[in-house]
Image (cartoon, rainbow, N blue to C red; front, side):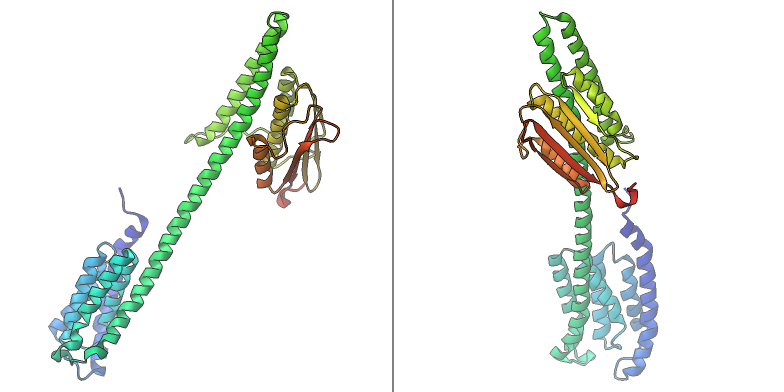
Length: 374
């Protein structure tokens, strides 16, 4: 497996940073030596330490703890020998930051505490001036500030990772729910029609075999259509396979014919006056399909009417029947709930309930997106 993107970048960024800090430490320390006449003069050992501390940062992302240990010990030796204070601390600060950003908070705090103790040794050595506890303040500042920044960066990075994971999970859940709803609509409608036709066939098998044969033929056609649509719906979850075109209101005549064969006469009024956005076209078709499937399941002997009206603002779909009242508007089944979720996801509204004069009514209003309004 290859390295992830941050580690691949670190393979060349960290050495560049280390080289830049090394050059800065050497040049800036020479200037600092002029401003600190009481410090020990720079000698080959001092330059070696000035090079070693920042050079270790070339592998800071890969090995943050060993790098922090190396930089801390090197810095401590440098300060304990009384060399000019200042520039070498930038390498130490970056090592502390790297450990805090890379490690869990507990391990990072322990590593930073040990590093602080290491670089504070010089404050109690006579060769370095023996400043005592007052010398701890600068070392503590060079530790605490980069440590706090590193922890903040780590938390921010982890929050971003969690956010991406949550977003991916939500997208996957939404897709599963969408596919499940599609399957419910396809299978539910097909099974309702097949059940009705099977009951007709069983009832007429002995008295009128020809009519029974007609019902069995309708079962075959309905099941074949449902299987074809189900395959198209499931294709979306198969890698590398494009989904079949989603059904729309142009398929209402075929739906009417299947329902008529199942014993439910349906009349249609109105058609869309312009091409509809795919999402609205599919939602309108599914509302009609599910509403008529509920009529087939619950209304008994009945007929149904579908009225479609398109305006500049959107599309209105209304399905009524003459049956015995259908299912409650807020029933526990998934059919009406699925219709409502589908419509509300597009910013629309859905009303469903018994009609005053008998029967049941489902009415969906689907707003047209402004950019696609006719």
